[in-house]
Length: 366
Image 1 (cartoon, rainbow, N blue to C red):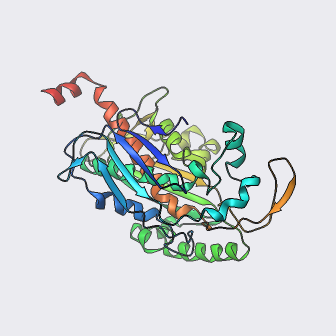
Image 2 (image 1 turned 60 degrees about the vertical axis):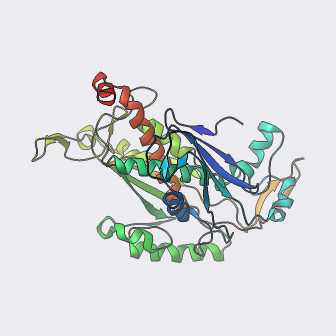
Image 3 (image 1 turned 180 degrees about the horizontal axis):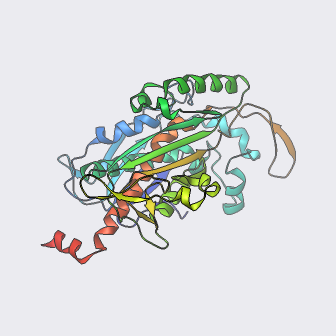
């Protein structure tokens, strides 16, 4: 299978299946000398761990990470870092029946069409559990970015029809509710909406927003490797993502140029800044020094107990009700996955940018 590797200099390869012995990632290109231990990574994995509330799958997994290589005496060595999380609570029998038919909204049919074979236990490689490797690697990337003054704030913007209020925005609320919303009132309303979905044996989608601050201007390339294009690819590679936008996004199509353009000015320190940020911090594929703001649209969980129409592998039509342990909403656990993929993308482009000017190379090797 191709397509399990991401990055140019800071490169990751994820591996493993939902119901195999474990999942993990190999990181290549991490600089030596970074202080790193399991606790740095574990706090990110804990944010996507199942079973934390009634709005996530009841599958019980500790998701404890093990560093197998690339770290010695508490610091990275510059060699590949291998990270492992063992699967502890597989119930493959929950999925034995689906071997004979295709679940709506899943990759069952496309896997069979491509390979003529599929691991039907929880989706195998296409399971959301694959994102453990992404989050583990993203934790390392985020720690390096913090050393460089770059930070990421990621949260749930909406669940179904319930959206946060800009007037009530409070970042301190994000870890204080099970939906990771920066608005306590919206979080309560969203939980009530999810309770209704669950009673109807249904699920909900939502949106995730990420704000990246501290990134200098000029990061990203101008043609195929644009910063926004690379972010879009990274975020769209998350299985549940069905939409992506930067800054004003799709609403920019409704504006006039005079409304959407961000005027330049100078601040009190004499630095060039923008008066607004409709561009979302990216111009011409490169960062412009403003906060980078993007959103990802997450589809409703496709595994639902609600009766659905589908067909068996021989084309026979049937009705199904999917059993097993599934999230009624993917969004809360996907917040840290979106953050991890953004961190990986930003760090890799920062490293690539070191070759943009001769003076950059001179600074490194003087």
